[in-house]
Length: 72
Image (cartoon, rainbow, N blue to C red):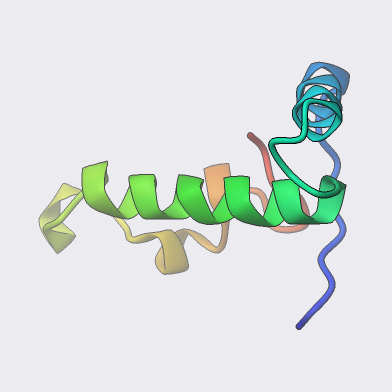
């Protein structure tokens, strides 16, 4: 599985740590992987469905138009 390095705001890191502490996830890696996957699925189901409505996720080159970082 490829490794991806991301920078997230401190409040999101704290929320992820709390979910791990509460036992919702085994560790940070599992939490981030599951939350990212869920977010992508939600984006696909609620995002633009027609090319005329806007560029697709792949055409934008990443989330929120940032090339080297992911913004949550």
